[in-house]
Length: 153
Image (cartoon, rainbow, N blue to C red; front, side):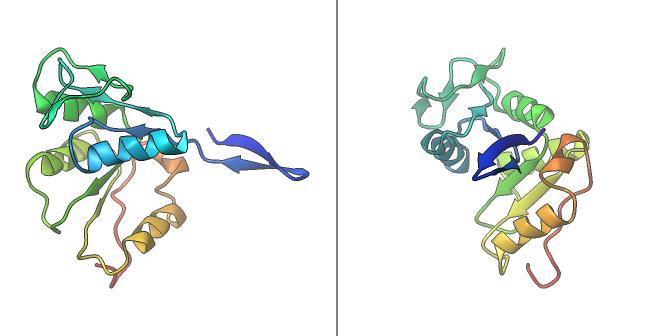
């Protein structure tokens, strides 16, 4: 539900956003650090013991622990609980945990968008998603995959 905020004499809607992440190194951690720096709510699931590739996750990250140390369990719970998923990768081909995330999104009929350097204009892909009805309001229910604009990737 959009939050209302005052701007001058008017009230405008500001979409509610929460960053959900498993806290792994790379894009996961960057998303959490960005959320904290901007005062954006964040949450997510991490493996039991708060384990990550680089050690134990800092308690500043507001993440719940899964029952096991299993990384795929963490990924499944985060996708299942999310309204939609943005996948970031260096390659236009998904592999490893990023591929697993996309597979969970498809299994749970959740919208997802893959952003990678091969796209000519990744920001345009996000804007297209905003204007095509698949984000942010429609992320409240399962929808189709967000596709980049023709020629954008």
